[in-house]
Length: 238
Image (cartoon, rainbow, N blue to C red; front, side, top):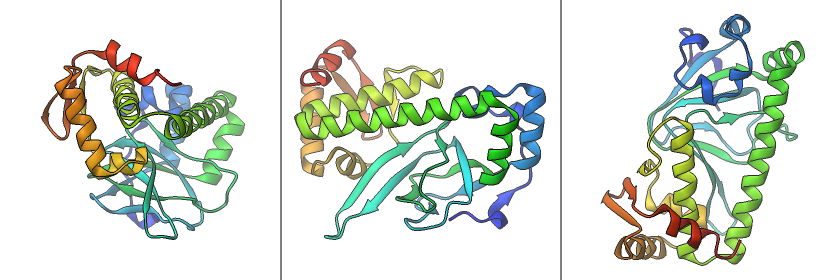
């Protein structure tokens, strides 16, 4: 996992472009000064691991740029993508002392890094930060449950529609146009996340495009043309 030697000293919480999306938004500017003294940046190149399954948890992270994936290798050699981490997402506390998934950079990424002990101290001093962490944990739990329901009950087309709408919601939270998606992940990543084959994901993209719900300039740039139809499709069996 990321070690202190890979942290970069230059860091400014007050100038962070994703602070409004991150848990540290619960802190005032003055309180953020204390965070500055504890935090550092970790830079990862595409394909580089932030942590491997089984590593001891020593730090918490906030993604400030780029994107990462949570992965786990199954005993039969298949890869499971458990989720994607985007700017503003928090990689934090857990009841487990070790990582249950490997975390890998999809593209070049930067994360704000704070030692777990320092984050615990901040939470004790600033209850608002602890409340924000709890809310984030609840949101993540709800998202996990929804994804499990989708895998169990929804068709491939419905799963893909739900995934695209989730990516659109993330874009909107970042203050960007939710109808213009930039997907950093590959079709294989999406397939491993949705529990489908790459061929099925490709056919599903083609079907949505032929039905006029999306347009695709390239595999990583998708325009949502009919969000209402996508929503009706995604909610068909929820």
